[in-house]
Amino acid sequence: MLKKLAIFLRQPYPFGGDFAQKILQNVAVGVFVALFLIVFQPFGTAQWEAPYKNLFLAGFGVVSFLGPTLVHGLLFAWLGKFKLEKNWNIWREIGQYIVVLILIALGNMLYSNLVGISSMSLAALMAWLLIVAMVAIFPITAGVLLRHGRYLALSQKEAAVMEDQLQHAQRAPALLSPSRIESLIFYAENEKDTLVVEASALLFIESADNYSSFVWLNNGQVQKQLLRGSMKRFEDQIGRHPAILRCHRSYIVNLRHVEHVSGNAQGYRLALRHFNMEVPVARQYGPAVLAGFKALSA
Figure 1: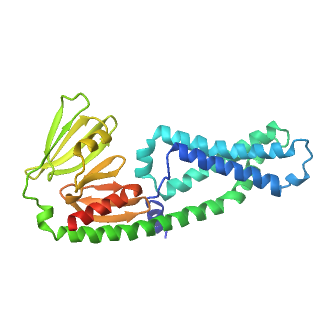
Figure 2: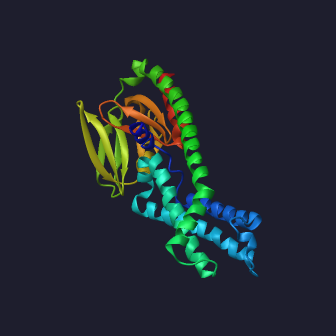
Figure 3: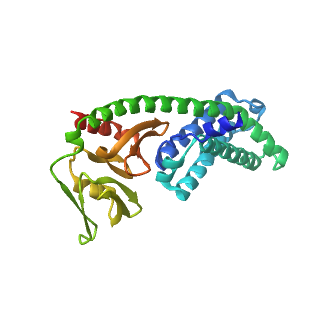
C-alpha cells in the first residue's frame, strides 16, 4: 500500500505557469480570503469590536497572498522555470501547499499580534495552523488530485492521437529515409563558430543556459556539440522544416527519430531512437507536433 502511494506521489505534475502567473493566482487567493472573512466572519471574528474591522480582516488576505508568493519566488530563484516544469510531481505540489499553509499560519499569528487580537505563542501558532488547515487542506488536496487526473487523461488521449500519426509515418519509408541529402548550417552568436549537420541525422537541440546543445548521429554514433546562442536563434536558422521543429521552450526535435509518444500530467514525451531519453512536448506546441506527424504520414 505504501509502495503504491509512493509511486503515485512521484508521478509528474504540471507546475503551472511562470512567476507572473503565480503572482496573479496568489492575488486571487488573497482577495478570496479577504472577502470570505469580511462577508462570513467565521472563527469568532463576528464578535470583534473594532472601528476598522473590515480593514483588519482584509489584512489576512494580504498574508494569504504573501505566503505563497514567497514560496514561489524562492522556487523560481532556486530551481528556475525549466527545472520546475521538468521535475515537478504530485508530492512536490502537495508539499509546496503544506509549506504555504505553515507560512500563512505563522503570518496570521504575527499579523493578529500586531493588531492586538492574539498572542505570540506556540499555542497561538497551533490554533492558526488548525484554522488554516480546516479552511484549505481538503480543497487543496482534492484540487491537486482532480487536476492531476484531468491533465493525465487529456495528455494520454492526445498522445494516443500523436502515436497513431507516428505509426502512419513509420510506414512511409520514403519520408523517413529521404534520398536527398540536406545539410543544416548553424552559426553561433559570434558568427564565427559554426556547425554543419545533415538534417536527417539531427536528433534534437536542447537549451543549455546561454548555449544550445546539438545532438546528432554520425555513422551511427551519437555526437554532441555546444554553440553559444538561444533556441530562437537556431530555430530561425532551421527555417520551415517539415520534420524539425520546436516542441518545448528548451527543445527542438527531429520527428523522424521519434519512436514512441506517451502522455503524462505535464504533457507529452517523445521517446527517441538511438538516444536513451524522452524529449518533452509543452502543451502549447502539441498542435504543431501533431501537424508534423501528419505531414510525415501524408
